[in-house]
Amino acid sequence: MTIEGLKKYRKVLILGYGIEGKSTERFFKKFLSQIEIIVADQKDGPNYLSRQDEADLVIKSPGVKKNLVYKPYTTPTNIFFANAKMKIIGITGTKGKSTLASLIHAILNASGSKNYLLGNIGNPMLDALTNGYDQDAIAVVELSSYQLDDMKYSPHIACFLNIYPETHNHKSYDDYFQAKSHITLFQKENDFFVYNPKFPQIENLTKRTLAKKVPIDLSSILQFSNSALSGPHNLETVASAVAIANILNIKEEEIEIAISNYQALPHRMNYVGKFKEIEFYNDSSANNPAATMGALVALSPVHTLLLGGQDRGFDFKPVVDKLNQCGVKSLVLFPDTDAKIINLIIQNEYKDIKMLETDSMKEAVDFIFKQTSIGEKCLLSPGAPSYLMYENFSARGDDFVNKVKNYEKKKNT
Image (cartoon, rainbow, N blue to C red; front, side, top):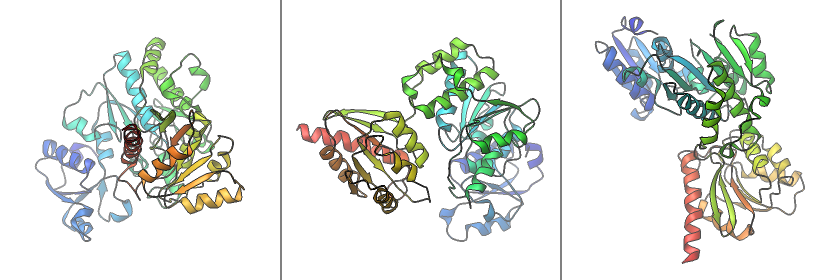
């Protein structure tokens, strides 16, 4: 909805007062100060949704389920897309979208192209308008399924990196995929859809979009090498970035400089260090089993694995089937997927894997140092969300790293 279109409303409710909600409030105060703003958030109590009755229009933040909104509404994402003059690159997928968005940002910087990193990984989109960002620049936007679910616009360059079984707060996997697919739904003939043909569901979207279709091609990155992006799953991320850079006519040497200098984002297969001659890796951002599989394959052999978390109905069988092949001898299992994983291990008749079920990272780290031998690897790659134990995956990864380093310090003293 354009600024001009918003002017017809007298009273607007911002539903959800987190980062996006506060950004929306700043936007309205600058451009639509004549409109009365009401704010309602879940923290306000059980009746916060009833405040919709007071408003002509609701601005729904991404974290609010759309079935809870019963008045006419729009979203901060739709407002940004309706009013931004910038060329927009939109990134979505189940895993790797933050890395891809930041890598594209790095490539654009290397080429001298003015650009902004927005969305989940960067600043809130509406802040780009409120703060007067250069409208001739390029916006690189990471888009979640929540932001895409009720989108009425699509980016000039849309990239759908991958899709794995996940629901988050969607009713089903199909709903989750449909929300993601909106990234290309409103594209036109002069737009581009960069997609991963490895996933049939994503490839099928090429039949439904008017945009120019650009499948990622792993052969396009044979000349590039980068230790910060190791593993087969990251090859697809790099190939997607190269495909987008080629659309923008960025020189090959500039792409190569950006990729070679790129530093991996925190909690994504980061090398923590060597402690007691054990190599530690932090992949706490792995919130689904497919991400764990990628880490296991990339770092194999992995001798000790920290696995599990909040049960979202994920299938851990492919991960458990891979444990022997990847050399896993010791497992730390976090709640509440621990019983499910143990049953799979029993079904596979694994007899030599030592296991610890715990909700304590300290206990986990003590177990790791006792069970892991000199020269072996330990990997935190849970394959599930952290919320039963931590606020988010960053807190989980930080606690792991701190406990490992503190164990080393205590033993040395």
